[in-house]
Amino acid sequence: MKKTYDPRMHSAEHILNQTMVRLFDCGRCFSAHIEKKKSKCDYHFQRPLTDAEIRDIESRVNQIIQTDLPVTEELISMAEAEAQYNLERLPESTEEKIRIVKIGDYDACPCIGPHVNTTDDIGRFRITTTSYDDGILRIRYKLHRDSTG
Image 1 (cartoon, rainbow, N blue to C red):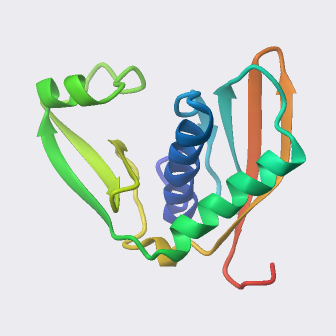
Image 2 (image 1 turned 135 degrees about the vertical axis):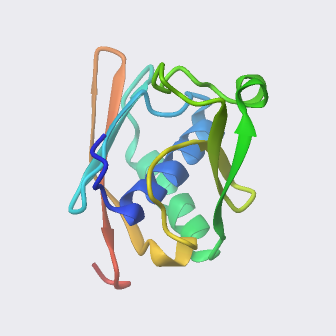
């Protein structure tokens, strides 16, 4: 992931990931490409999403965004992090303290990237396309600042 990616998109990725976990118990994305104009997340999945599921994901992500949750961070020990989180995406050179980014009480996960201060700063989330191939579900999304975009 680029270190200069957009905090709005990255915060939306966290909300999308938690939504996928809650709806489908599929785990967080194993690969993501976060850019300012559009982003994508890849999940291990068993099938394509239905149109109704796509609309439901979009709606749930937007509900969380509109709740205006605070986005905060805390440092915890590596031992604490290992007991609570999946750390397989952390680089080997990770320090003893792990930064956990929290989105209200909706999501918490280890992360090194920049984020918004509150979910209200994200804008409206829209899934542009999805695809499914050989056990991998890809969700592509954009963010809009206005309510019509």
